[in-house]
Amino acid sequence: MSQNPKDHKASGSGEGEVSAKSAGYGRRPQAEIVRELRRLKASPLRIEDENELWTGVQEKPPPPDIPLVSLEQLEALRLTRHRISQLLVRPAFEQAVTGCFVRVKVNSEEEKPEYRIGEVLGLTEMDFGYKVGEIPTNKVLRLRYEDLIAYHEITDISNMSFTEEEFELWRDNCVNQAIDPPTTGTVARKKIELYNAMQSEAKAPALVRQSFTHAMRPPQRGGILERHGGVYPWTVQMPEHYIPIPPPPPPPMNPPVGLTYRPPLMIKTVEDSDEIRSSDPITIPNDQESK
Image 1 (cartoon, rainbow, N blue to C red):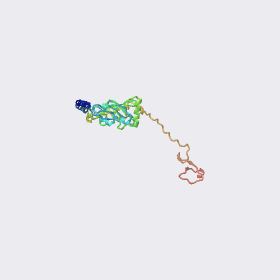
Image 2 (image 1 turned 180 degrees about the horizontal axis):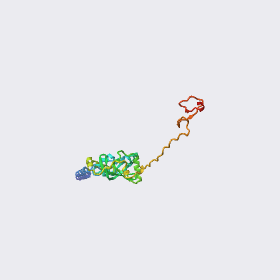
Image 3 (image 1 turned 30 degrees about the vertical axis):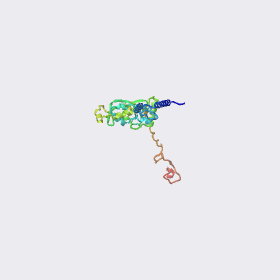
Image 4 (image 1 turned 90 degrees about the vertical axis):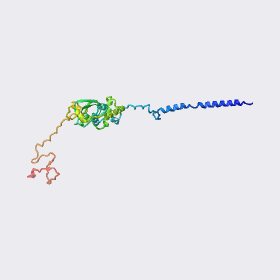
């Protein structure tokens, strides 16, 4: 049976059209590809790290606010007497020192120095002035330590670091008094405040002395609390009772004739020996031999 060549040609052209159409379905239009590339180029790059964070638009989450648990962490909030004297002549002095910690002396000059870790709660002004180095001031620090809130002059602050014993005492006091310790967020905030305060313009010491109008108190010994009649409870010491020295014992009533009384020496009579050595005790001859 013969086939029509026209029918064969038509069937062949139909298969070609189907294959071309099926091949065309797998391709994306060029305009769509260009739009996709432009969109990807405008979007931020993605960094394949462990946190799967995006840079640019998305910011990293802030670190957690954790309470301080070590001496090294608390040292970041410590202010020395030298640093306080530098901040004293700057406008943001009170804001900079509030919330920081100092090593303060809590007893008088006559006693062995004792220090505590104190938190600066604020400032107070007195009616008289005193000098911090060459700078006159009437400002004192309002400190919290142990179970007290006391006022201390800047001269009572130490330049030395906290000790481990002082830190353990401070941490135990925070637990006993239910005081929240500072956190890592407090450390970060105070670092910024201290940096901004140190970068601000400071008054010249000559200008500070010229504008200071308060009367200067004469230098006195002891802490500010003692000068106002208070006594620190942990340094109360009663004077020791005076114990008189007993008098020496009296000499014997009838000492030997011709011999001065000496308590450590021994006296004896020798009958037969005529030699007396330097190591022998003192001897006295009998009355019969002397006759």
